Image (cartoon, one colour):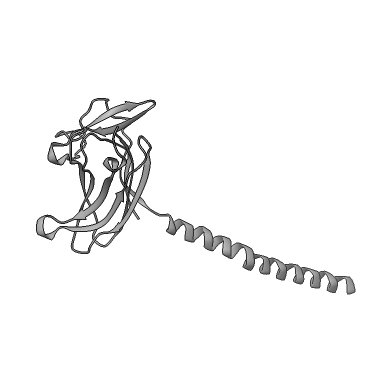
Length: 194
């Protein structure tokens, strides 16, 4: 009889330890797993790394990848060692524009890698990434990153987060480089809905 009481007491203590262990271990782990799923949930809207594109393709030409090259900017797919990229001409005022349908009120992230090459001063390598919505007088800048004097021939990664206004359903992602004699390349162009 005494042995049975000790067994019940030991089993009872053992059960309480398991419950306490579950409270202090499993619940936080479960919480972290559930929270991390929601925290990292994002939806890919667009992605282009140029690997499946034909070398020589003008991405700013009609009926290709639906990029626009304002100011007669021309961007062409080139092979760079074991990697394909899109590269601009060296003319002054180079633009690369792409528009996307988006959901009003949602957050997005535009990521892109850029590389600028010239034989002149560093200020000529400065370029700007901008996200805008609306047209003409109703145009609104949502976010802007000025990449000032990047190192010649070195890739720079940029990530711009923005929220779409409630009354807008389209955004335009813009890259602009002012100085003549400078070539800009892009790779890993991506838009995610956060």
